[in-house]
Each structure stands twice: as C-alpha cells, then as structure tokens.
Image (tube, rainbow, N blue to C red; front, side, top):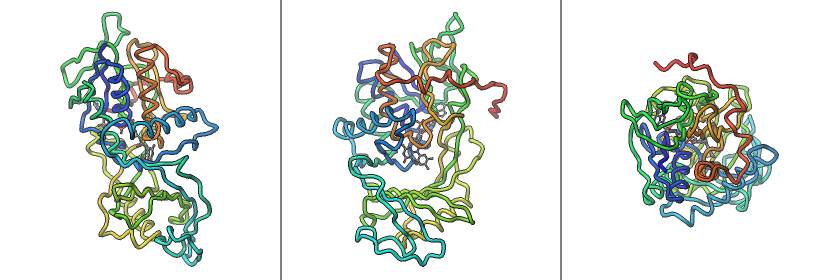
Length: 366
Ligand SMILES: Cc1cc2nc3c(=O)[nH]c(=O)nc-3n(C[C@H](O)[C@H](O)[C@H](O)COP(=O)(O)OP(=O)(O)OC[C@H]3O[C@@H](n4cnc5c(N)ncnc54)[C@H](O)[C@@H]3O)c2cc1C
C-alpha cells in the first residue's frame, strides 16, 4: 500500500511516522520545506488536560502521552521538557508590586503572578520546528520519502470517486490513499474534493535569545494594549530561545507558504509588550520577528478522517492553537484508520462531513 501525504508540517510528519512504523510506503510532498509554516513558528506548548470538557480531550491526552514516548523512542533533540505554567497580569500603570518567588524575579515590577496553572505532570514544551524535522527524519529512516513540490490536483480513477494519487505540478504520483495535511492551505483542496472551509488565522511572534537567563516556566499574562485586554504567552524553550506571542488578526492567506510575513504594527506592539514584561526582552536579543497562520475550521475543531464522496482520500487539518500538541495522536489515529479501517480514538467529533462543504467557486487562487 502506498500513501501520499500532502504537506510536511507537524501533522504530515506525524502521520508519515505512524504509517511508516506499520511498514506502509509513504511519500510526503511538501511545497516549501519541512515545518516551513506554523509548525516551525509555533510556541511548542503542550498541555495534558486543558481541553477537558471538550471533544478534543481524548485526542489531547493521548497526544500528550505520545509526546513523552517519542522523546525516548526516536533520535533527535527537540527540547522536550515538562514545565510549570503561571498565569497573571501586567498592571496597567506598572506600579503594582508583588514579592515574586526567586525564580520569577526576572520579571519587571508591575507583573503580577496570580496562580500556577500547569505542573510538570500536566504541561510541557517542545521546539516545534526541531520536533517536526526529527519526526520526519524518523519516518525517512523507516523508508518514507520526502519530495519537494506543489500539489496541484487530486486525480480520480475511472469511477470518478476514488483518489488515484496526487498531481504535482503536472506529473502524477499514484497512490492507494491520499492525506491532505496542508494546514490552512488545505482550503485549496476544496477545489478537488468535498471539503469544508479551513481558514488561516495569523498570529505574530518574537523569538528572543535568552540563554539560561529565563527559567523554564511558561507564562500566560493579561496585558492592556490600546485599551484592550490581550493575552500574552511566554514560552522559554530548552535551546535557550524564548517565544513570545500575542495578538492575532484576519489577513489574506498568501498562496505561497514562503510568502507569509508579519504585520509590522503587530510586531511593534508585541515588542513593546514584551519589553514591559522584562528587561531581558532586549531588542538586541531578538532572533526572529515572524508570523504564521493557524488552520481553523468553522466550529473550531479539526477535520480528521475520511473525506465524504471520495474513496482513499483523508484529511487532517484545522488544529488551530493545538496542532503541535495534537499531531502525534492525529498521526497515530490516521494510520490506524488507513491501515485497519478504524481508529482506536473516537474521531467522530472531527468527521469532515459534519460541516457543509465549501463552494469551490468561492476560492480565489490567483
Ligand atoms: C504563533 C503561533 C503559536 C502557536 N503555538 C502553539 C503551541 O504552543 N502549541 C500547539 O500545540 N500549537 C501551537 N500553534 C498551532 C500550530 O502551530 C498549528 O496548529 C500546527 O503547526 C498546524 O500544523 P499543520 O501541519 O496542520 O500545518 P502547517 O504547519 O501550516 O503545514 C502545512 C504544510 O503544507 C505545505 N503546503 C501548503 N500548500 C501545499 C501544496 N499545495 N503542496 C504541498 N505542500 C503544501 C506548507 O508548505 C506547510 O509546510 C501555534 C500557532 C501559531 C501561529
């Protein structure tokens, strides 16, 4: 059996690994490079039970466990580490004083820590680009192939329903099954199959080189920006980089993933907010000013499963803010679905058929 995976983000890479572990022939087709988009620019934060009470709970718990297993199972160093998480706020006038515990004294006056919201048992972090690349490398080591190219169509067999592979800029790669995992660009697949809309929600982030100066605790802080309360998230990672993100906007998704750029105004505001948090967020320490598009669906839940009115066609996208967390269990479940006909985890909340398909005439691809 041969499976072609469209997209080399974290979802494509994890699906490739779990399929390759079953001895299935896998070809990943990636337009730009592995982890070129959100999977390379995310925070990398993982939480075991922050989806409790939602349809994502079982997927998130399984995935959290798989992240810990993968850290021991496959080669590579992507900085997997359990972490503590605190929430709090930044006092608008900056004069609030709090006797912070010693490990939080790197924070400026005016930052108030309200409570601990994650522990080493419930929260962790990875470097998302290094994680995605290591998972892809592990799949390649098991025989998977990675080809650079742009998927331009999903050709059908004579019955008109069965996907017979993918078209990559004019040439066809034949396959028994195809997985669409192109993040927000999965929207384009609505031209080729009956699929609901996937939107891209843009978020800026700044990455600082903080070395060992910032301890390994994540922060979720309420901050006032132009009179509005916004949440700013701080993720120190094992490689000495600290990822800071806040603010998101609706912007047109560039057709080329390599053409994604941040909104300059959003970066300026995010930089000012970061400097309010700590003098360690010094502009001289900035490694990256970037943005990425989270894949989002109409009801906020991912699309994971078989595409209706098609045979041999599957989709895995729309993971929104939890794509790094939920990638391993998504890949595992898809591999089970493709190879065994059913996944161990209940995928019914993520059935693509729950949402109306997008009218392809609404797509502007130029
Ligand atoms: C600022 C920010 C912070 C985040 N932080 C976290 C976090 O802390 N924890 C967490 O769990 N999640 C986080 N996320 C969400 C997470 O990054 C995404 O949900 C996840 O990366 C989506 O992965 P993906 O593989 O579906 O898509 P993508 O990463 O977008 O990958 C899609 C791939 O498809 C390729 N592609 C596109 N079109 C084609 C084509 N025609 N042919 C071939 N290839 C194509 C692209 O080049 C790309 O490599 C964050 C997101 C953002 C924006």
